[in-house]
View 1 (cartoon, chains in turn brown, purple):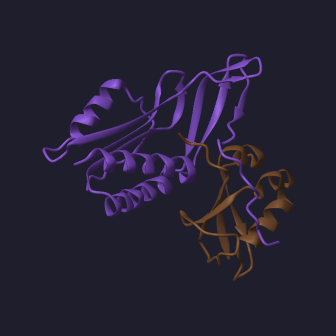
View 2: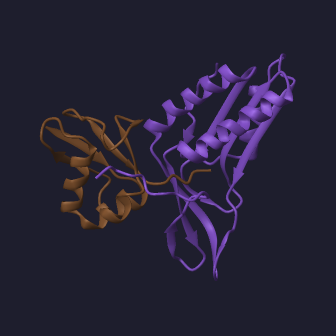
View 3: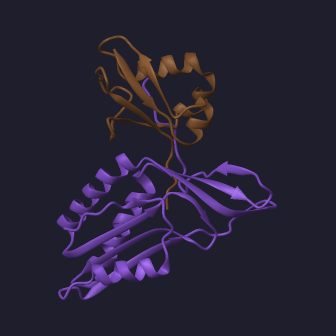
Amino acid sequence: MVVTVRFFAMLKDAAGADRCDLEVPEGSDGLEVRRRLVSRCEKLSNYLDYCRVAVNREYGSWCTPLRHGDEVSLIPPVSGG
Amino acid sequence: MLRMRAVTGDPITWEDVAVMQRHATRISSGALASFIGVVRADKRGHRVVQALEYEGYPDMVQPQIDRWFQEAHNQWDLTTIQIRYRLGLVSVGEISVVVIVAASHRRDAFAACRFIVERIKHDAPIWKREWFDDGTTQWSQCDEHHDPVHADV
């Protein structure tokens, strides 16, 4: 199955893109996405420990089960205001 | 309950704030609490902030704001809430965010206004990049200390 990963702020800089489509096995969760991202782009590993995860625009966790077509947003520490 | 698109790429003027305050006021409103966030010229060593570049995820922010409005209305006796949040490059002295809460009484207005502002600060997927007077930039660290989010790996 394929999920879309969204990058913001410093993660976008590290990834060199604001999104990517990632093929993962059926039944994968955020942890599998994380493993595959780090193997593709080692620089991301500096930030992922501090990120929250949102699935389809709702905060979830790295263990949230994913389905084909889901959007996984990596949310670095926010600094609005 | 008033719903509006809260996130904007357009400048927020002091005239806009006055219009929002006027629109938030109802005949049952005895108190109007306003929070106005303005970009300040912070110093980082020898560098001085000239502007903040706000990046956000509006498709996620808007439903959050709708939910916070509902929570605030459930918790306090409010008449209206209005929020405007500016994304993009905002110069020192310009307005980045406005939160206006109207209520019958001041305690509810103050409490709900603070609640909304704190939710924005802690949960809204919005980030800021500092632009300095020497031409350098850096992503701003948030005010509170952040522990790693354990991923159970």
